[in-house]
Image (cartoon, rainbow, N blue to C red):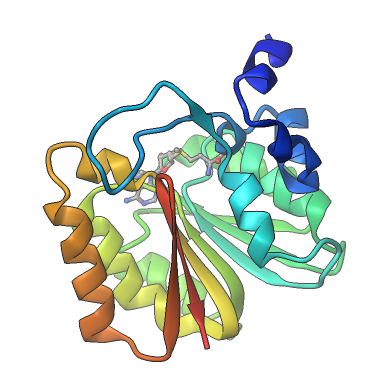
Length: 205
Ligand SMILES: C[S@@+](CC[C@H](N)C(=O)[O-])C[C@H]1O[C@@H](n2cnc3c(N)ncnc32)[C@H](O)[C@@H]1O
């Protein structure tokens, strides 16, 4: 099964250490169906988000990371292995079952809707700036923009804010994708948007 998954990924992606750690934990960030964002046509390839993210990440660096959307903790395990053991890894998920992921080393999971003021305050009260924030939550446009509003200001200088599965919100038309880019343009300054299939990586500069 793993062989089949790997086979469908471009060979250069084998060279990505982050991608290979993703395979180890069966994280779906390394084997995602490609919808060739922002074009709405579906293509039959698989794409590896982790291969693209690694262009913006440094192995063993000590970072503060926040991920919206934890599910079974697969990606939390990936971050935990890839970054230094002194890193602080936080997650938020609306599903109370995700609480068990707090058992993963160096990890704290908050339960609640990421855009509920209680969740926002839980994160703000950590008094941290984040080197990496990943939005892998509901993938609805309104949630994505609300989370940007609350969490983007917590990003450190040169930090990255990743928005995943753009195609889920974009499947009907590419208008939402352009709306999202306009939202970023109208609300933030000093950033670079890196566009990949299905994801964008916003770098604060
Ligand atoms: C795609 S899964 C996350 C997968 C995980 N990041 C990984 O890569 O292994 C999406 C998760 O987002 C959570 N979620 C959906 N809407 C949310 C919200 N408004 N606030 C917090 N979590 C939410 C769901 O409960 C689900 O566990």
